[in-house]
Length: 253
Image (cartoon, rainbow, N blue to C red; front, side, top):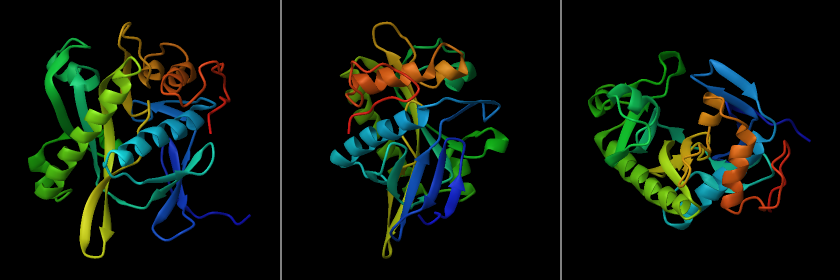
């Protein structure tokens, strides 16, 4: 088998050249990182779960008309995606006070926000992914005003979809972050959701108990990350409910 060309390796994923023009193969690693990679571990099975969960969310978004980079899942750890030009911003949607927002504004974790709040952070680990304003974004030409309008609309549509799907399985979406990329059809540009949507990039809380079912389990050392992600996968029907959450989970094809 021919060796694939490595395009990019990040903290949680590796991108390889795809089999067709303008495609990439996205490989999900078992690496877990937090606090801009100051805390690290390898958690066997995490990449398998995130691959399948991201497939579930991206497929759902495509179905309801929110464009994403996802084409198809290849195997347990890989998926075929469209190559995009990533806008160097993290788009964060917050429904409940948590994380840095709670710290910055002195809010009680779990407090409902008056409405969904959309924030932008510059993608730069060395700087700690700083919060930036729309003025910064336009002044430094990271995105245009039209891009910002489109990104805001996409983020809120993702929020509507995610919140509805997760509420249906007894999970609250406190917040999440997405990345957005440009694709070009001739001279026409459009923006689509890229990267991944998984418990790595979302805060998922059990509706009844408030139990955290996301990467905060790793950040705050609350228990088994694999168990938390498996619980999300089982509620969504991605894993059979009678499956034992082990290092190498059995997934539904």
